[in-house]
Length: 233
Ligand code: HEM
Image (tube, rainbow, N blue to C red; front, side, top):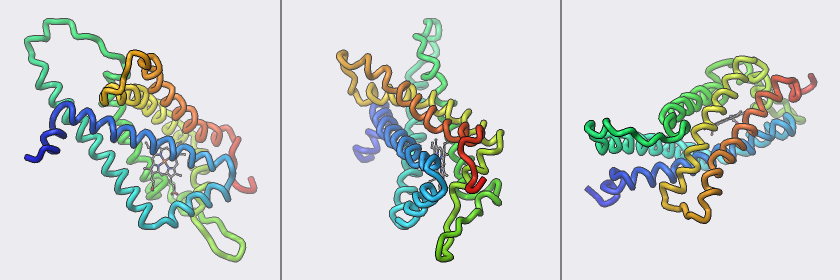
């Protein structure tokens, strides 16, 4: 077995891999949120942004594959770590009262699973058009006769359905729990914590998670409240 495979299967290696892939995913979520804010700038801004992304062709596919690989590696490292932790905790120690970890830490596998389910649902919704195909297939007519995917109308019509808007807000709350613990343990897993900065590190996760929760949830809430409407409405 190569040194890397030995390292990746060890507890320290799995922790490092989970931390680095987790950070990459958290950064993706932040950048994606900034892109989603184009909805507040209107139909032209959002559709133009989506069109520019799609025009990168091979680069977009490379980024998508990289993202998919990062998700798979993150989950595999989490499973490995959980197997190793269970193996290192013999039954006989059950008699001792375990040290209570935070609520966020204990629910990490569950919030992780739900966030994963959300990503599948989200891709089926906005990327594949599996649900609400009429909204997904909207096109914007441009001066000169050209057309492009009307991502703006797809998002606005999607979130005008209260159950859909609510499902996104609930998913963002669970993502927030996951990020709140994940972003703080990133520093611990990589040994980057320092007594001088521990107070800041402790709040890094919750603050980051709150920014994502407020930023992303603002979109379905604003649309449901009628603050962002269809073109010409
Ligand atoms: C309210 C919050 C969100 C909104 C409004 C939103 C909106 C969108 C839209 C409109 C697309 C399709 C873009 C297009 O076809 O041009 C998309 C794709 C995507 N979203 Fe989101 N998103 C949100 C939250 C998230 C979160 C939290 C994640 C990850 C945890 C995520 C992951 C993705 C991924 C992986 C894609 C596929 C990108 C691609 O096709 O290359 N989104 N999102």
